[in-house]
Length: 153
Image (cartoon, helix red, strand yellow):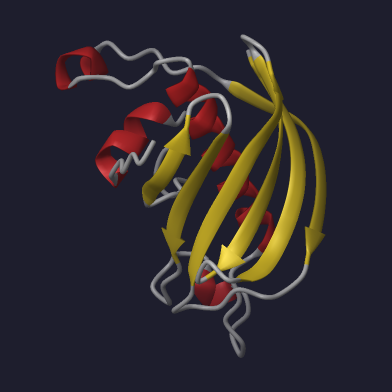
């Protein structure tokens, strides 16, 4: 299903808050199966000046966090957690525990790039997900791959 969800709706679905929301938009979604999310990488990001001062690189750990957030969005949407404006006022966000990560970094990400997080479910239960994620630069070159296991606490 082609589903585009903007940043304001994403904020309602994620347990993270500024400055750690690392998904700008949901590009595509298939219930209980897959999601594609977008993150625009800007030189104005809070972490860029210190990582690294002479050669700006988007930190690998934040790429993995972005993949994890895309996975959380897939889980939340598959559980029917999309909220209306009235429901959002009473939204009780779930806490997610990332318990296992196997990651491989392939190419560095720089300001000006767009990261597309492609996440697919390996196994999903009512309170846990095993998923694989691929972060692609400009939706073509692979920057990182990860297998994640997280559960709702």
